[in-house]
Image 1 (cartoon, rainbow, N blue to C red):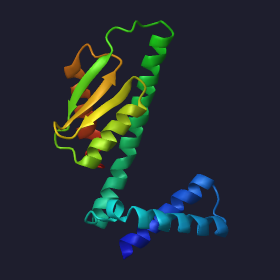
Image 2: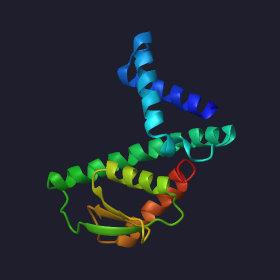
Image 3: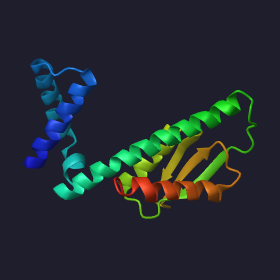
Image 4: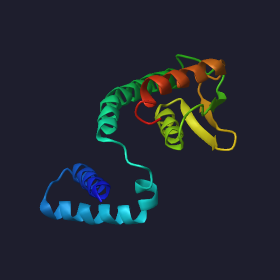
Amino acid sequence: MSRVVVALLLLVLVYAFALDSFDPLDLATGALIGAAVLVTFRRFLLSAPGLSAAELARRAVRFVPLALATVREISVGTWEVALVVLGLRPLRSPGIVIIPFEDRTPTGVSVTAMIATLSPGEFLVEIDWERREILMHVLDASDPDAVRAHHRRFYRRYQRPVFP
């Protein structure tokens, strides 16, 4: 029961921040929408065993470096794409790179794909669950092993402590 209450409170808080309003009527609306989301998606949102408070706190602290590293990835990707678009750097070898799942959970795979796609210069093509591979289109696929190594380092250093 406490997981449901905490989830509802978090959804109401997200709704209030999205509206930039803590008016009681807006909070009530957020509670109704949050309750509908929890009822509709309860199997997805509440089926996994709960994490301990210590684990949640650890993940929350480790989320900050993940967010900052993601912003850095977006900035670097934007810069690289801008150089190509402005003709200051040639587009040499765009292509598909296969990135293995390794020890990622399904949530970890989704977060990896989302973070990579947020960065300009990379785009999710497909997630192959049977072969346990992510197919990414990258701006420079001349060295696929370097692309894979970059994704592996990012996952191990920043993402795995938060979204394994």
